Amino acid sequence: MRVPALNYCPIWLIVVPGACQSKILELWRDTSALMGAFEAGGLPAVAARLQATLHSLENARLDIGITGGTGSGKSTFVNAIRGLGDEDPNSACTGVVEMTVDPTPYPHPKYPNIVIWDLPGIGTSRFRTGRYLQRVLLERYDFFIIITSDSFTAHHAQLACEILQRGKRFYLVRSKVDVDIAASRSRRPSTFSEERVLRQIREDCGRRLRAEGLKDPKVFLLSMFELGKYDFHLLEELMVKELESHKQHAFLLAVPNVSKPILEKKAASLRQHIWLVATVACGVNPSPVPGVRDVACDLYVLISSLEGYRRSLGLDEDSLVRLAEQTGQPLHKILEAVQGWKTKVTEALVVELLGQASRDASAFTQELLGVPILGALATCGISFATIYQMLRTALDEVVKDAQRVLTQAFLHDSDHDSPPGKQREGAGHGTDKRALRKVFV
Ligand SMILES: Nc1nc2c(ncn2[C@@H]2O[C@H](COP(=O)(O)OP(=O)(O)OP(=O)(O)O)[C@@H](O)[C@H]2O)c(=O)[nH]1
Ligand SMILES: [Mg+2]
Image (cartoon, rainbow, N blue to C red; front, side, top):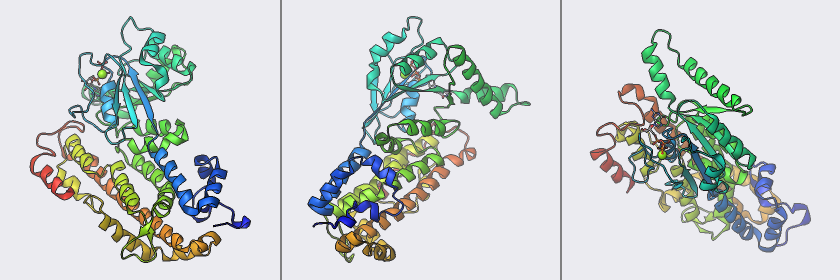
């Protein structure tokens, strides 16, 4: 189909409400290639290209090097950032004796394109920065996280400077702040202030690093057992912000769901890509959807997107079981928090959701039909509007469920006596686990 010159504008710029042009240009610097594809093959050709874009956004490779003092919590962090406890079969070994001797890759269990590298400790007197970076192959990493569980030393500062000089980024983490807080609370109960303890640690870290020659050091205070507390969301925010844009979405998908700000950022990133999914679903291999008038699409694309929303926001079976185990909340309580669909996403479910969306999408569809190119591609316009509407509504539901699950899992900590991150006897096991399997199968 030949597109009149006046309307020679990529379809997604017209049809996507709120799609910001600069973001699209960022994704597709070579828009002329897309225009060429549209001219040559219409929507199917454009959709095929966008399918490749979507795939690369979701599967971008990221290698993160976790380094720092021996025993500082590197391996525990490697596990926590992958959403695993220390006893998971895929976990890095942790413990009080020196554990990590060689760089070891740990792919994220749900997103194997995100690889967290557990690097050897830097604490020994034989430590030489240059040799260390050569040994761990500095070039391999997108960025480093340098961890200490007590004071930062000249070794940390040298490592940071060298990483910077070689054109890579690093983030500084002070771990085990839960220990400092507990000690202060028990030793000085009458004057205890958590805020003050954290401020003192922060100031001390800053002072020492500046003395070792680091300019404006920013230190993130963490407890690896309670990532949802303290500075993890700030660290996550900065890591995402400073990543190359084509890697941001993939990293965000994999970040553990430990706080509401993180859930919201994930949801925003997923929402931003709905138009891409909708275009691919109705443009590549569409077939009529039984029982939903004028809608043709590839249901498989939608099934895998909805599964992807649940996986990324922590509502898949494995994530819920792990969450129950890690927080000690009974699994049936966590399950009760899921009010949307509880079963695996099936074709029948997607058809039902599309049916609901087609009723709500009619006004939106009318708007689209008034658009010149979409007027010619009326059926596709209806499909696009319905799919867009369906994905938007489904994502909102998944986000609400994820927030309820998070509230159930973490905000009720005070009802229980053991700390989060430590498994309570019987939690998440036995009857509960079987009940979950029944629900998911
Ligand atoms: N309380 C508390 N303990 C922590 C924290 N992070 C790690 N630990 C404990 O500190 C010990 C050492 O943790 P690892 O993760 O093995 O430390 P590592 O840096 O990998 O150690 P090496 O590989 O031997 O260099 C373990 O017993 C952990 O459970 C934390 O944030 N808080
Ligand atoms: Mg280790």
